[in-house]
Length: 158
Length: 124
Image (cartoon, rainbow over all chains, first blue to last red; front, side, top):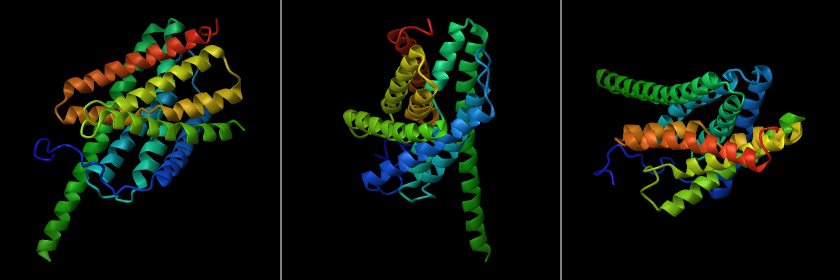
């Protein structure tokens, strides 16, 4: 498998955990993530017809964090406890970010004839989310590689 | 008390997304899990349809907290959608990455409109 596609992710990095424990971790994380998103919306409500800045910030920050998390867990296997990815990735970040509210907000803006805001919000979220996950993954990979180099060089000097 | 309903909805929505993803990937067979992320696509489409129905039905605030903010919010995800798109792009599948973005957006929007239509329109 690795010779055909060397960049293919190992399937899956950490050892598997029992299914009930995985589901429990996903549920607990999802509850926390959804609560955090709800809290953000209570603290920073946005007006109907305006740019939904709060959901925008929630989704973009969640994307940056999953970029970091996936490099640490799956790609480089630095964090290997089998419940870390179900809890933090599938649960917390999956529950924190939302596609349905994003789609419904775009639809709501279209229905209100706020065409410019609808298109700006739709495009800005996709663009910023993809840039955030890319930046999160790339920065984490570089930091890990630098750390590994420092350890190797330090070990040689000692 | 709405926050508690959001917690309950989130605790149900996230495992539903996980099980949906697993079921769709099992249907695809091993080895093609990263060819096209149908699992996340399906969860996002289903959650958007349900949220459209709830929007069209103009449900009460507690029901909205439980099902819209909690369940639909956690059933759907932007983070996994973005990461899977990034992986497609990084592994030389730029066309599939772009297709995933366009298809997810159009399907999500269409699902919200369809759901609202089924439930009786956007508040009339």
